[in-house]
Amino acid sequence: MKQRLYFVDWLRVIAFFILMLFHCAMPFVSFGWEVKNNEHSIGLTRFIWWLHQWRIPLLFFICGIGIHFSLEKRSVLTFAGERIKRLLIPLLFAMFFTIPLQVYFEFLQKGKITGSYFNFYPRVWDLIPYPDGALTWSHMWFVVYLFVFCLLLIPLFLLFKFDKLKALKAYLADKIANPITIVFLSLPLTYYYFTLYLDYPEQQSLLDDWFLFITSITLAIYGYFLAQSDKFWNTCETYRFYYLTISLFGAVVLFYYYWWDLNFPKQNDFNLYVYGFLNSIHIWFLIIAAVGFAKKHLNYSNAFLKFTNQAVYPFYILHQTIIVAVGYYIVQLNSSILLKMSLLIIITFMAIFIIYRYIIKPFKITRILYGVKLKEGHNL
Image (cartoon, rainbow, N blue to C red; front, side):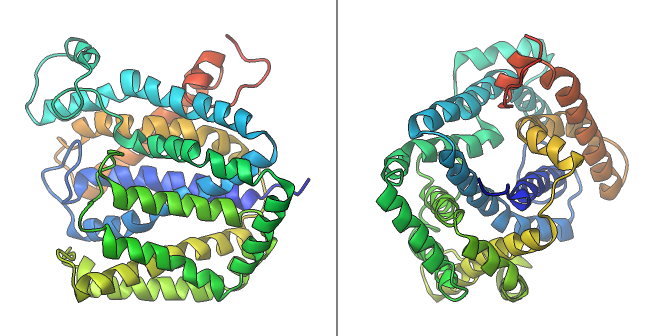
């Protein structure tokens, strides 16, 4: 068996922690969110918008890599069963028992409700979707999409279990991993901007969300195909500075023309074509640059990685609910944005760590509900 690619584990952990920090900033930016501070930071808003372009694409690409390695060790049927256990069960549990707490604090701040959480919670079982009701998958939309992708791609996974097709997949992955050829993988992403970006703005609702859906499944497929190619990893490492430079150049131009004043294309014209081309290049090149830097500097394991690699999924499930609940009180403080956000980050990570370490990790039932792999010796 090949040596484990620890840098992929590091990328996954780092990407999810960036996501958590991203949501810790959301009360303090101008975009709408569950709980909001009275004062907003325009500088933070611009930075958060830049993060928003590539954080989710990077995660779906990493998930595609994970799908490849998961299928190397198990049958497609076993893989599908595992996806149900590790994606669908935590999703349903979160929707009914974790996320309602953040809906409560959101409704409380917006003046939609009064009273205690215990009086509010039965509304979840009315099964009325948010925002009219209290039932939502909220940030767990990512899990919904990933679960649907895994189901939709099962025929593809079955095909590439055949030896000849598996060899063809490896051959094509090596050809695509050429430092020049790999550039052209940004073109489908550009096409989605031209054809879907305006008609299907990001909703995270699964239905009528074609720009986000198609872009995300494409990146997951990229990860699945390229993961087996040593040439791909080496190309990313060798040309990482070139890819990063191109990505950052694209970001600078995008900031100058679009993001500084948050002025986005609103109609299908040349302005949209420039935006779509530049942002596709920016996102894709940043992903492969991140892979290259991770391979160069993070291809090792330690105690921190072993802990966080298991903990990151429960951290993800819990993080937004904790941020909203804690943030509801923090935004009421008479303090600066920097102090409030720092407090929110510290309290959120401490609270999730305690919940994970002492409630989720020790017990089999909580490990199942939060998508953590079972180990022998844990309590029932």
